[in-house]
Image (tube, rainbow, N blue to C red):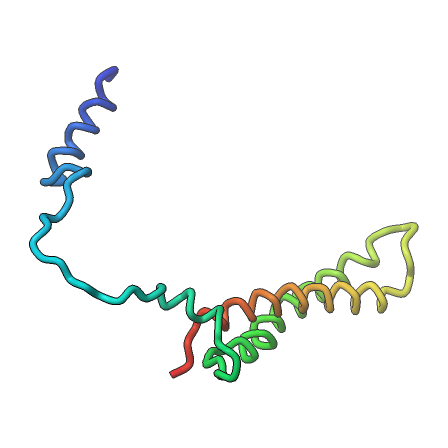
Amino acid sequence: MRNAPAVLLLLVLLASGTPAFAEEPFTSFRAARWEPPPFALRFTSRAGQPRRDYRWVGTPVIGTGPGSTAAIVARATCGNSEHGARDCTGVTIGVGLLGAAVGGAIGNLVGRAIPRR
C-alpha cells in the first residue's frame, strides 16, 4: 500500500490519453479582434448607455430573505438573557435592517451578473 499514490497517479496519466502539457497544433493565424469576457462587460458601461441587468430587481428580492431571517433570529435570542433589555423591538429592527442590507448587497451583485435580454 506504500505505492498506492504512485499507482493512482500513473492510472490517471494513462487514462487521460494526452499529457496535461499538450497543446493544440498551430494550424492557422486568425486575426480576430480582442474582446473582453462578457462577465467583465456587465460591470462597466459607457456614459449614456443603460445597463441591462437585474441589479435593482435582485436587491430587494434577495435582501428580503436574510433581513427577515435576521429579524426572526434576533427576536428569538433577545429575550434569552437575564440581564438584557426586556424590550427587544430596537434590537430586532436593527438586526433585521443589517441583514437586509447585507442581503441587498449580495442581491445587487448577483443581479449585475445576469444580463437582461
